[in-house]
Image 1 (cartoon, rainbow, N blue to C red):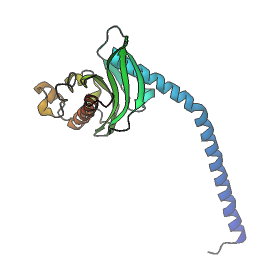
Image 2 (image 1 turned 45 degrees about the vertical axis):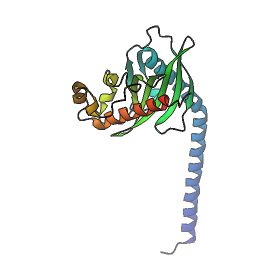
Image 3 (image 1 turned 120 degrees about the vertical axis):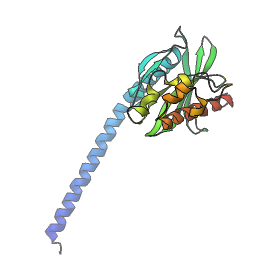
Image 4 (image 1 turned 135 degrees about the vertical axis):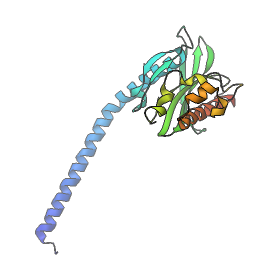
Length: 217
């Protein structure tokens, strides 16, 4: 069908209106982002600091603001009953796959170890962990802070006590990465969720090796 002059003008008018709407929307989004980003960054920093403190000193912290959807509460055993350990010197790690960020842990000027933010590949996608190691790379504690695992079996890694099987490993004792390396009770507990188990174990092993190799010195 041949377009008339009126048809062409109407098409141009509609295109101009759509272009104007897109331009206004882009400006509004830019305006909102400019004024909300500092608040988001500040909240993220506060929540991250709370999560790190809970990991090294013990306690319960909600970390939904810091890590988005799929968050968990940190429920850890107190590693430092006095609650005086400080997490500091956070920096990005660019030379090791699976390690996002590292922090130093000090108490009264004495270095206790490191906290690493790690990424493991679970059944549902990336799993983000915070792992606390001593200076030799031995796992003191860890927590899954965000994941997309299947509710139920796949969420076992978020349950209190799940990380018990890894505590103390990674220094003189390798991080267990297969069910055969676990006591029977722990092996039975991860049955049906071996992908999740391997994701957590693999991430913790990567972090342990990085520290043991002197990657943070």
